[in-house]
Length: 149
Image 1 (cartoon, rainbow, N blue to C red):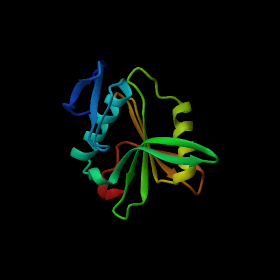
Image 2: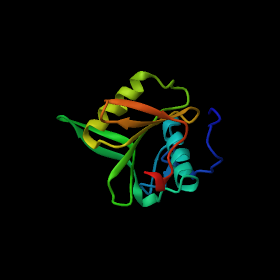
Image 3: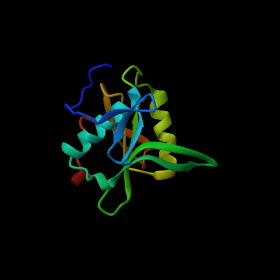
Image 4: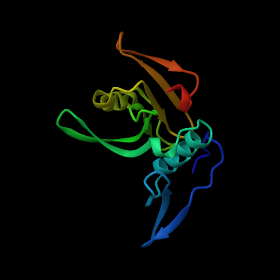
């Protein structure tokens, strides 16, 4: 596995029925160990430990409706009022972050209308603030901490 550009973190890993699993601290369950899931667990740890997001204000694999199609956001971050403020899309380290990835997360935002979109493959992290007046995005140099959302 590629070395991630995130703080060191030791996830819980085990074998169940011949398959490697990783513990999702948000969903409180063992899930299939995939490169994307490894990025998610590292990134969530970063959000909790370094950006001060309460675990109770993070949802993994949130179901949403985009038109008549059911989709799932990798992570949704909520503010103190429990309003969705950030959508995070994770990719495996081997997946290049492209405009298609931003198009995907932008479609999810049709349903949630959050202020921030984050895309990470564990190596490269991009955060944009949505500008609803212009219909555009402003790229940020850093991921906002919990108190600033």
